[in-house]
Image (cartoon, rainbow, N blue to C red; front, side, top):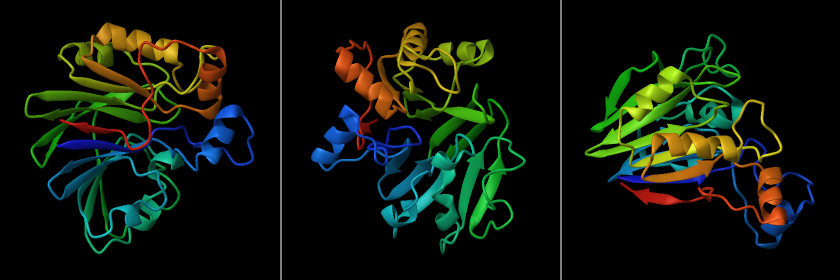
Length: 245
């Protein structure tokens, strides 16, 4: 099984439109970009999406079988791609936390998407991969996911401003092989809808993860790290990072 990240940035992406900070200029000069955080699992020719915030995700996976979509929440940068993907010729199951509004008119005009509301700590098995929902603290009702495949256990934890005692106790009951966690902010911002890299690192330390990474980085955080030569115990993911599980 492969876990691949299509993007690992916050909702603004990198470079940010007309921003001339050191990071945005560096990305432009290298002809690079980093899109909002979005990943997928692939076994042979079968794909499971973890969020779908990239607008042209239907083109990226054209002529690929999408077995399921697991949404963390209904913010635009995590579900924008569903607006086109709902017109797929295939019926696709989309699993998500409770949200009466969803995003845009996705619930009103479902077309090929079959929405499945999940409960906290519920289990769903797709292609022999088990997904367990983990409630996270965010501005919208949000789930992280514990992903289990064979003997590997992966914690996927975006977006969040914190993790409740109940969710932490659940995660600590496992020996985690991998963990990927929201660390949008730098150390100057201690409150908001996301974690900073200090707070995220403390959570990873407590979980005692074997392989851990930060994600959902903003251009201001990346610039602060570069300009202040900040040492990070855990590194940020880059776009197109691939993990063989």
